[in-house]
Image 1: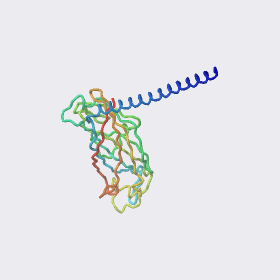
Image 2: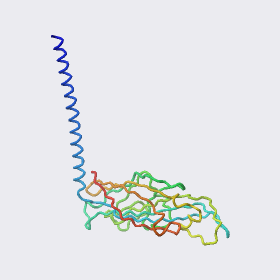
Image 3: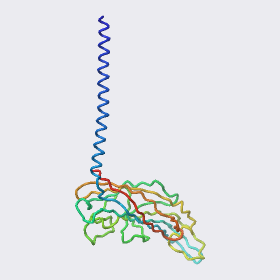
Image 4: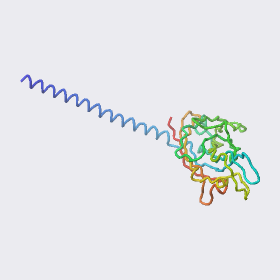
Length: 265
């Protein structure tokens, strides 16, 4: 009889412990669900209205080279490079400037290449908008890990360093450059004039598909209410369109986009 009582007590204790464990598990599941729902509701409440977006990007792709030696019958290229200048227009979606839709801090980071060319070496730079579409490598403004922008309301601000107007009046301008596609390469066919543009790629027997590249990065904005926003931008420099290729010269492409900055804080 005593043995039966001990067994019954042990079973009861096991049942109580099992019930307690199950209750804890159910509580954690329900609490996790509650936290998740609250997080979604908080995110949704912060993003009822679009404050900042990117609705347009302009990309200009071309090519250039540096001569090492030249003669009447040939010339040798020291560095054949392809570049794409990119203007990213931030829209503050309001004709009136407020603390909510003006810039306080802007930075870009997390540069990621999902597709890389099979030739050359690639870098991304900040570029003065006044030099957009010019064959110029802005060596001092390379974008590697992070780039912080100076925010200004001065109409005469020097744009040689990363700078944005606080009312989103000027775009983020970057230059993607792929250098040394050909180095110490001699062109013997000088029957036609040498033009320093995309046609050099054809003269140097560079397949356009060897230049294909896709990359992305994150843009962070803090407005003048100290609210924080983030947007990931994906870019693919153009080398061919429906009626033209880089072999024919330069390509300009205007993209209508719908990138939204999501407020996370």
